Amino acid sequence: MNRKLKTTRKAAALIPQEIVERKIFLIRGQKVMLSPHLAELYGVETRALIQAVKRNIDRFPDDFVFQLSHAESEWLVSQNVIPHIKYLGGSLPYAFTEQVVAMLSSVLRSKRAVQVNIAIMRAFVKLRQILASHKDFAHKLNELERKFERHDSQIKSIFDAIRQLMAPPEPEPKPKIGFRQR
Image (cartoon, rainbow, N blue to C red; front, side, top):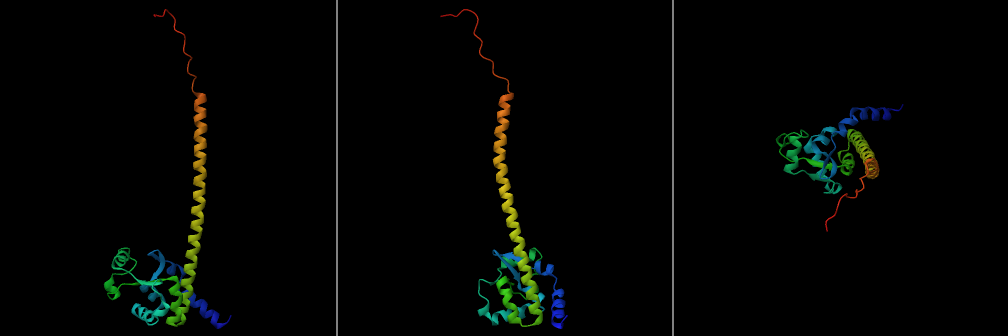
């Protein structure tokens, strides 16, 4: 086995897939990773990561990277996703979409950055596969539900017909006996 392949496998083993997967969140309707988590994975300080992004801002459009609002940050702090802002140097964290994460290895330019990128891309692909399988499952469940609703109404009409057959017939009115007054 050649040396480069051994190094790649060893580096990939340093970043377990489960750790990367737990750092992907849904914020503003997008799957993102937060700057403190990315910095930790890449082995750099958060401010160094943000500086690298700002130096190459043309590679990071606003719809792919955005700074969280105070409300979003407070919510993430309350969920123990990130530490309090005072521990992040007082600045709000940034959120990076999958497309931006792909650019980070070219900006950070280290072997670890390449390996982290590979692990992150695999995690996003796995997440897409899981979501697709859930959509298929939800669609099949909806189909089943519709079938049972149709069957329920048919079964109800069968039971109604059986009840009608089981009910004793109403007696025919008997002619009155006696005299009628006119």
